[in-house]
Length: 183
Image (cartoon, rainbow, N blue to C red; front, side, top):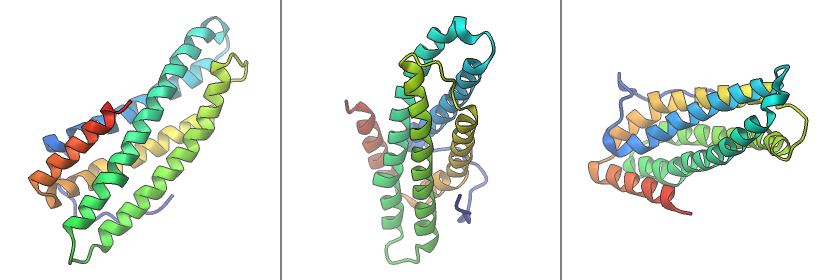
């Protein structure tokens, strides 16, 4: 994992309303990871055979939801937020922002790679396979996601609130909302 050097921070990670949708997505990622972790461990428990079908159904629904949330998260940042932050620093030395964007983009790829491994196991379980979930892999995904979103909440989003104008924040909020309405 990349070591990140935080840029200047604000004491509170509270988000302005334009970034509320993204913050809600951060919370949703953490909740979905916690649910995935719980279901994976339940599936591996002795006596889970009686619950296996309901766990499979829950894992399948969770898999689809997590995939969408992860895609929105990545796109919100890589398509909209990072370019807006870099543009806000046009003519200035934006080394810190460029490095943060590069580090977080690399972490997005690491999250996606780990998710693809977990998703393959989920798909096997959903198809009725008797294999258990790779709990260690699920735990690693959840831990990475928790660290990643905590850094963004503490560093990236407060920076965006400081550097971006109200019209730019509103444009970001609109783009994020539209992304979630796409089929």
